[in-house]
Image 1 (cartoon, helix red, strand yellow):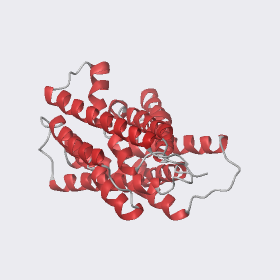
Image 2 (image 1 turned 90 degrees about the vertical axis):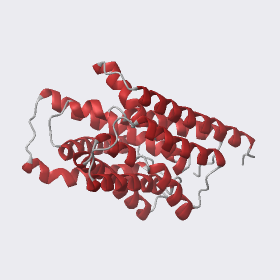
Image 3 (image 1 turned 90 degrees about the horizontal axis):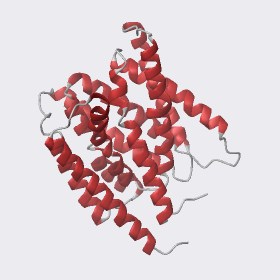
Length: 294
């Protein structure tokens, strides 16, 4: 079955990416509950996520023929695994703000790679949203930027390139099953973390195990399914522009749970990003409504 870019399918796709970003945004709080090495945390939550996705795959297995080809699945899985690993390493070598800001250069890379590989062009509102998102991120992290290292910042940029590449490769599977790539990515990430179990033995407490289970099943497990669902229905660049609300929501959870109030620049930058993404989504939906349906 081939998916057409109707207004309703776009709305469902962007809604799924939006919910995915909400789940992704809770990672900061969850990670604070686990006193392990960051790579161990990434590997453990990916191990749980892989089990979760495999279980969902068996539960909802389709019997019809599959059109997904190996290369896009492998490329997307490898790119997302590299995204998670590079982001964890970047957080160790540079500031968290630098790591997040540079990772979310992903919409720019998705636009370039998507245009080259699958000829997905950007509409004028997406170009405008891309510029506003970059400006909003700079304003958002204005008070926290700086203090990092060149090596850490470069790895964070690589994380953004990998993230953008993943979205394009996932989009290449729009007539197949992108969830396969997400499953592969978590298997690769979990395998990468195996040596760290011996180098940095984790303390297995009820709280840490519960947090890892929560992250694996909901924060990235369910989020992976939502992203796979959404990327079949929206372009790679639109998926990345919608997902960029993730860092905006992080301070909200900190405020609600820990009472830490975000700075004025965070509020201004976050408002700019959310407004730009919402306006772009509305314009895109109106275009789909005007497009003849087949």
